[in-house]
Length: 415
Length: 80
Image (tube, rainbow over all chains, first blue to last red):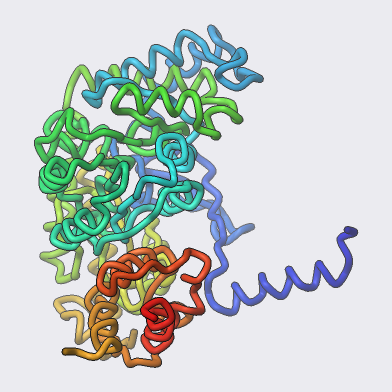
């Protein structure tokens, strides 16, 4: 079919509708390497500004770490730029196998398979290991990539209320007749920054003979005493059947992901997972970079310890200033504003003060739960966080929300 | 004994409603965004266990599950 004026008009109308509804996404162009201090062009065509970034997934500050950059350069020189093949034809190098072994050791699992992204890992894993005789029982707030993976799988699907263990147990009882039951959760939930109750989930899975799947993308490298992830924090290392995670956040932030867990399940992915079978894997320089990241994190917990201190400083600072934040102890710290327009206004004013933080509102978060999601990094120094807190205080004062409770903010700004 | 529509209404509220949304017998459940199509499976299994029936997958459509009264009609078809 030709791309007619009518077709063009149809799409233009849809896009206009997104703009009218305030749902149209625009990019902000960064003219520097990813770090705590970045140079941003926004809106498009405006002069570049130096701002402090508090909305990256760069939890460990490794995105532009000199040793990681050097390792990636060396990987590029020694193993080339691309593979021009999927893994099972001629797209597997020694360093891919090396990285898989290192991830297995780091996470304390039995085996690991790399994917081009964690989105691909989540998209491919369920269909590879389950059949129509099985059931997937997922937390209602799991990441969109898991929902897509579930949609691609022929197994039955049910949900349980977010982190509600009683409800999960009811569902495990309801589906006790299925061949396999698999409970699916994020380790750390990306919008609220809260953590799954993995210890209780492991106990329930043992009681009802179910498998447990955890996407630990917002945890690997820094949650737990040695940064192994949510399973370390909850004391259940070795008891999670499938962990998926990303190299696109704390672990250098470039790209790539993996499925790590029971060796037979990993092998099923190697035989059947479509994003693995029909797409090139992670490019050699990125593999070399992630290997260096894991070496750094295995040698010392310095960076995750610093992140923990920064997070505590930031959470306390926001609370002392009179903001409402989502409680927890992860570096994802949502500042609750409830009203969508207020979240956009505060984000814009923070940017004017040299702080880059994004407002989220419906449908990304539930209606009436608009917020600024802040994300702390080991790359932040105290002066970054102090400057950001000063800006938050100034903007909070302008909108008269400091020390106000949820009801008072809603009364003033609406939902 | 409690009427079927009230049993189902209570189940829907307990299972799917997490705020103060009111659910009546004709409230649109799926088109109204109260029950997502993913979660229909637990509703179907609940009905099958509770009323000892088997609802064929092709009959468990979003339209047939869109209100408590419609669900009652569907269940009654298989009770006979």
